[in-house]
Length: 255
Image (cartoon, rainbow, N blue to C red; front, side, top):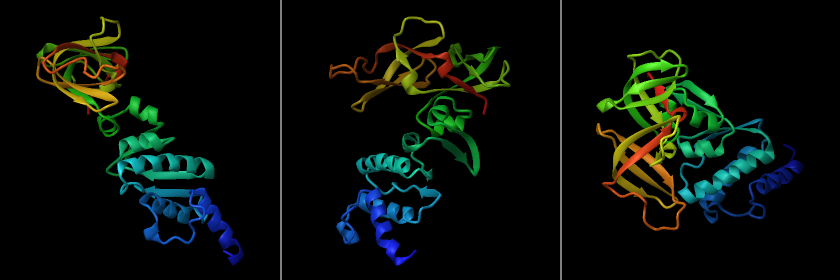
């Protein structure tokens, strides 16, 4: 690079990562987030066609990591180049990406938009890796179109979306997300409804997670947003409740 261009390009790179005016600072005079921005500026100053990032925010604390996620996404939009971003943080993958690829032992299991990968996982591994999931083991009783009836423990019967190739008698695992579970809904078509007992209540501020024990002993997680002004949770340990989830929110995996 000609010397005449170096100062200009360094200035452009620092401005891009919001470090303009800090050219002469020593590393120890920079915060952790600012040091991460310097590393990005050093990568971007060469005008790459693709930027590879291997867990770049892993060493940062939670608050700073979330702030840097927003900055990185905005930066990618400004520079207009492809970022390939490696992370083991599922929430980070959903937050940052236009497209996600889930890999296991060198194999690409599924690719798609964050919504496609989260809402329509094709394998149990993908559903387990991206977000929290409830799992119930059972046996296929009947298949009707793209749905199957499954017998669970204590002969409870529920319906799920069936992947191609399922047949009666096949052992399957049902998967559905905690936020898709509702309490005490009136009976509706297209919904599974089971009775259970609240075993644990976990309050985490914006939401509350309930662990509900089914008659056969399996636990189902249900996550509800705390939209009420009441400080107490609506369900307590020991309460008998009806839990429901939509058939099309429940996948039957044979793997």
